[in-house]
Image (cartoon, rainbow, N blue to C red; front, side, top):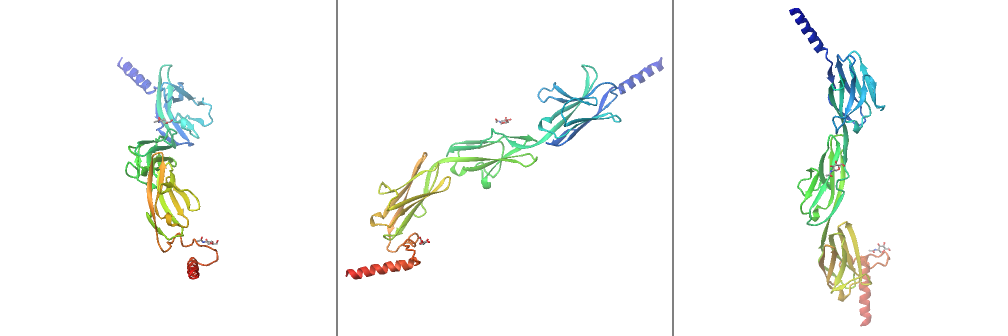
Length: 355
Ligand SMILES: *[C@@H]1O[C@H](CO)[C@@H](O)[C@H](O)[C@H]1NC(C)=O
Ligand SMILES: *[C@@H]1O[C@H](CO)[C@@H](O)[C@H](O)[C@H]1NC(C)=O
């Protein structure tokens, strides 16, 4: 009786030990795109129970796609292969040239009955270099004083870190030369904040990605006059200059005595944009006459405002150089000094003749 009990206990234990189990499953795999992963599942006492490799749907975890059953591959994808090692009772699933959509949860299953199965999971992650999504800011144009929000979103695996910098490592309006986060906000932009901003996404897989974001700030013109007072002798040319800073580029005009000046035999107006928002303008007064001494105004206007600055031209007895120095040019090879001497000589002679 007792022996029968002990015997049945032993049998029971023996049966319990022979219950099918998954004795080994691979650890999580992290692989670069294009790489190879091998997933191992070792089983014991499975007898005739089917052993399956399946992929678990990332959204609906109750849905699975069968990859293999026993030592037979089900999926029709040449990148997949299956090895069965009888000695260790191990089913090895190999995936070559791994792609982004191969990432996810793989499961080794031993099917006992329709309702009952033993399972073990292994996660496969595919490392993907960062990509910057299209919903990131490309460029912005705002008026001075307004607020801006620069956005940058990036994907990849592991999820990339997003940071901001400015061209030439310039100081960010947020302070410092680096800002971490998806959104760079500036409450009230100043014209100094304009320029190129970089959104950088990095995850240590391959090279990081960078997007250049142009920040254009519209502001009303600001004029600086390098030389507010200039002297010149009669009959010599003189250049009056104004430097204009404005965006959008301004319309520039010159005035004398409330009269707008234009290009003619007395004046030559030129403009030269040194950058998007810098324009140098020069008014050349040709062969200065007495009535041309006095105050001149340069005026710059764009949709945000108007600025005006004054330059004074006064009379001197000696020609001022530049621009007067080389203006008498008979291409005779004579230096300008020689020329001035010659002219002086001629004037003296005329005077002599008059007497
Ligand atoms: C930007 O686009 C990505 C990918 O399309 C999306 O996952 C993300 O939620 C979007 N972000 C915003 C703020 O729209
Ligand atoms: C004077 O004329 C010569 C010859 O045409 C020219 O090469 C030179 O640049 C001129 N000088 C000035 C100051 O205009």
